[in-house]
Length: 335
Image (cartoon, rainbow, N blue to C red; front, side, top):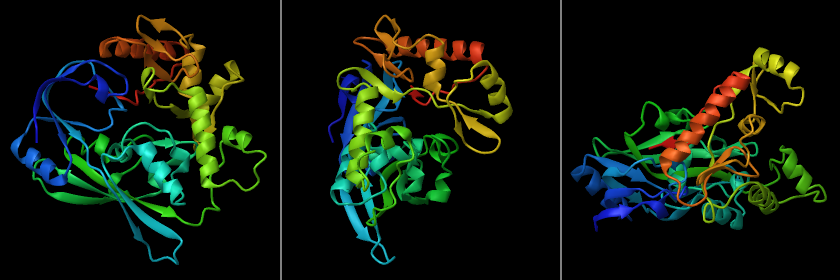
């Protein structure tokens, strides 16, 4: 392993923020990772760099997880499902496309989400009516303190909306090395519940999982900026969930307010709509800004610092609270 000194992390985070790692190493095997965890106690883990905003140089040893590989094993339920295990360093979107190419269904609605497989359960990533927890089987993780491997099933992970045990009680205590999904070979049960998908597929009576994936890729490319062209981390804020009573009061003032029913007592409001109503959509503050097509996405147009992007995020939170009395939670990890 080659530990490098004073390496810029600009190419390792999708926001394209320039900060330095005092020490940096890329690991390609579980054995290398175990060795580092045993020898180094002050570490910072870096996967796809898609769900973070770097605001200062990293003085810890930055470990870039580059574990690769996909393994398929059959299940025992009449050949209708299959277990697919991907190593933590596999690119998420490429993994989804690989599953689709094998006709393994279940992840197609999560196409084009940035990041790597290893971080997907931490966030319980989700889009277009589907979350990781819907197909999650188990994950393998390395306990940093002991160097031991542990298997976590779905119940162990305590999945919630953009949440898991790894963002709470176990934050910073484990390194996810691989994730196993239970996918289907019987692809008649596809999820086209979101209106935008139905609209694109209205002439297709029997869409395949590839059709679903293609539609979602088209929708996302139309609405979201490509991190390779404009630095961003996708959705910066969580969609807030409020009580039904609070929603009714808002609806009286804003009859057109979009919403999704979560339960009898809870309503989800699109954060992008709230931000747009506050006048931030398309606004630019130096090199930091709010995307012109999707207000939920904060962007780095060229050389914005992490602090500048974070300052903009706090302005948005303050204005949404002031106008709607709703607290916007940040989805991205602020480092």
